[in-house]
Length: 123
Image (cartoon, rainbow, N blue to C red):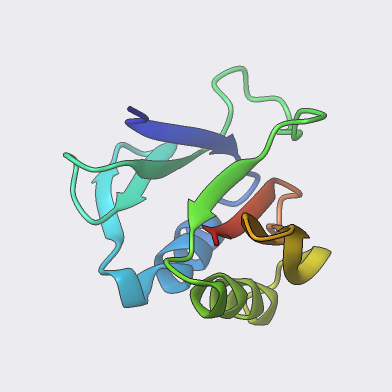
């Protein structure tokens, strides 16, 4: 049901590199680039992450309680995305682990602009 989620960034080129490298193993690439906004995913017909410099030209700032969650495909996949994000400059906001017994495994980071991301698996 989600088409795309947008996060504000300070450096568009750095953000495009972060997200394309983070999801390169899943076949993601920049699908749309219109100057101040780029959409990254496998195709424009599948959910994407959009990175943009805010329209009002003010500094971007993550909302309190706002988070974008990406399926890992497995516990190992969620952990691998977490570790790759850390290597790409993200900061830890919750190491990989089982959050709800027999139901939800999650790993949390903040991207280089402070946007909170979750990599998860329902297991």
